[in-house]
Length: 466
Image (tube, rainbow, N blue to C red):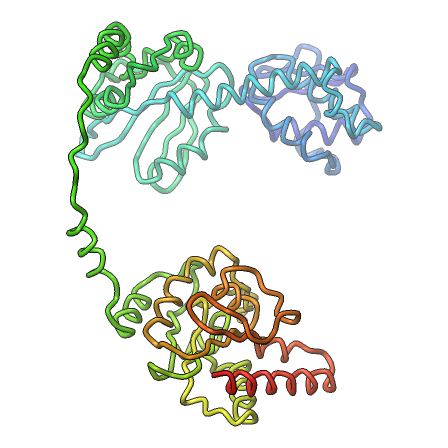
């Protein structure tokens, strides 16, 4: 008989080390005696340094283990090791057999722990206390059914990161001081946790959201069992609110229906109109002040060219060089566009050049910033800016370079290679062709020369239409 002694509570690390040793030694579940806390009378486990090789389990089994070790059932470790043994010995899909007695019991333990975690998330209430040095800290008392204190710690750290707080329970304690989380021993309910102004504010909020027409004491007790009521300030108001609910509902029914007061929207509409940019310069200032939808860009890259330009060319988004210089089409793709415009006999200086998305989106790889295409949602986010911008420029023809620009202008997905050529955009005559970056990505010189000739022909055709 092999004896394994684990610490009190949820000893996940200890259980994992034990499983490695037991699996390496091919020790069957019936040959293991699991003990918690004090060493067993039948001997003790091997030293912690004698760890076996890692044990590879299905992800669902690992997740179940992490939850069930928090349960208070003294047989939890024996049940979990029996599950591991069977999985390692040919039953990899054991958790799919919900009618299996072992799986059924472990799923019930898993459900009980998850319910306990949910209750602690929902029903724990802090009270504000004054420190002797004048600072403020928050203390809460909660009585979980299982060993979930460490499991809930990340939730409270993330949600109350700016507070100094302590959570006390009969299963253990947590303390957060803005920078680090500390665990402590079990404790008893302190006498100093009387209701305070913090609790009073929560009570007022609860009363203001109570709907007497939907009161259901049975459902309330099922969702919020009475065992938690003593530590929740709002429960002091529940009996009175339940008793007064019928009278409040009757009063609501008897109240004379009030005709809504008609409001004239002229002032609101006029105020909204004043908030809209009145010129391209105003719009550009608005764009420059706005944060990028995807963080990382150095600056917004504005459109460039004269208002009233006959042709507006819309690309996808700024690249690395455009983001650094703050100008559109100055990187490799922009240089290729300039060369194609010259070959087509079009003066770049007379065009208006802009992008559908105004900020550079990328992924960092070492020192390089690798371009990432914007999503449809990101294109939609920037679309109002683009449409307003074109409204100030008033071009005769809008040329979309690539699928992203076509999506922004047409309001739908466009297959550029199949639909290249004239296209009706919302409010403008349009023309769709490839983006110069497409030409840069082509593998062979001959293929690149042919595609570039087709691109120049598209630009000549667009100029003739304009």
